[in-house]
Image (cartoon, one colour):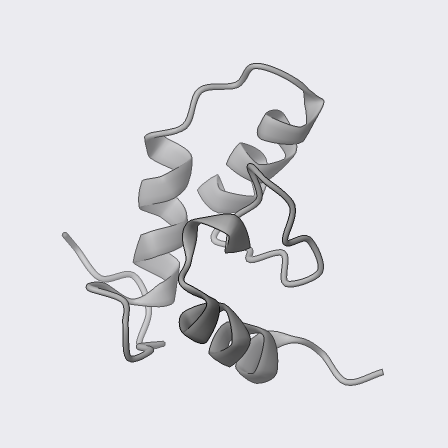
Length: 76
């Protein structure tokens, strides 16, 4: 796997950007939601607001999910 960023989290075998792109590359578009996540992933974006089935975060363990949300969620 060619790493596309330097963002590594314990519990992932690759960088976060590579995980997101690999997930997008391996996904099939079957509805609007899957199209949304594939589009995000192909552009190396992580949606930290959606944890529902089929989301990017739904493919992570609870521990990695929490670290991702903490590290990458923008403060408002």
